[in-house]
Image (cartoon, rainbow, N blue to C red):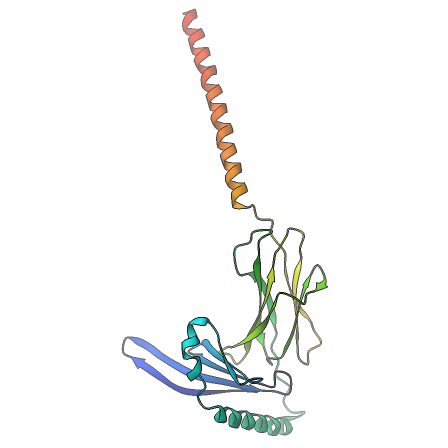
Length: 239
């Protein structure tokens, strides 16, 4: 269950309205609770219920982290309220309304331009996530990876769904096949996104090849110049 609370907005005659809001969700699956602070459609902070800490979406927001959720007691109140409302609503609508689920879609790409043999980061983006309860497994050439992983984050969307991100540090080579496997809680399907290196030409190799080609063409044109000069001189002597 997802609950959005609007805290307020600022208005300027030369600008559109801006909204600062909190998105709270509660569910029977893990994570059982989530709390996000949004500015318009962009996420700024997330609340970690395991140790009551605040996580910034990007480092630039760290300076406002301590004031993101100033009243922890209010958080507990709203989580309890959300769970009670969810339980009552579930009991009232059982066998009447089907359970809402998204159609998760998985995309994998690199954080930096690809260079084989150089360290990079793979980003697995999962769209249309609902409920926000995922199991994400990374594989390399069918083998499950347990190192180089970064925990994934949820991002609240305006259509009441969520987006999730998972990160994997890699050093790719041309024969590697990576996959990001996603399972949504309560869904028997596994959605898989694959990433395979596209055999890019390293920039230094490309530069050397172009330099060699230019040098070769220069020699050819020089020889052609000597040939034409010889032929012209021969025709002139005949005259």
